[in-house]
Length: 176
Image (cartoon, rainbow, N blue to C red):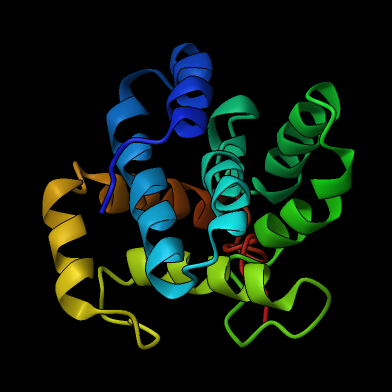
């Protein structure tokens, strides 16, 4: 499995000042999600979209300093896609970001890429407990080569703070 992608590298470098001390943990999460996408969907034509969605899917945590990060993450992706002349990818990547925490199967337009991305993120969030038929050995190898570095603990801390601030909406990013 390849652990270097030009798009991921360039965008992550661009966001490095914003992400700060969390850079390595988020970058590894981005790569684990990307690698999981490639394990699930071998269509080469989808790889660039997965790379973009992986970088942007949680970026609102840092750009807008919020755990309610879906819309800010979508805004960042929208702006990037518009600036780079990829307006034809906006709907698909926005759907990938918007539904990546859906707890049930996504069924709709761009089903293959949106559902693949959803599964890929859940594989990582579940620390490989959920595999959705992807190769367990490869998932484990990817996790070893791209260590967590405290990413899940970081998320738990953010979520815990949000529970106290917004007890009626403690997990705003999750969708049924």
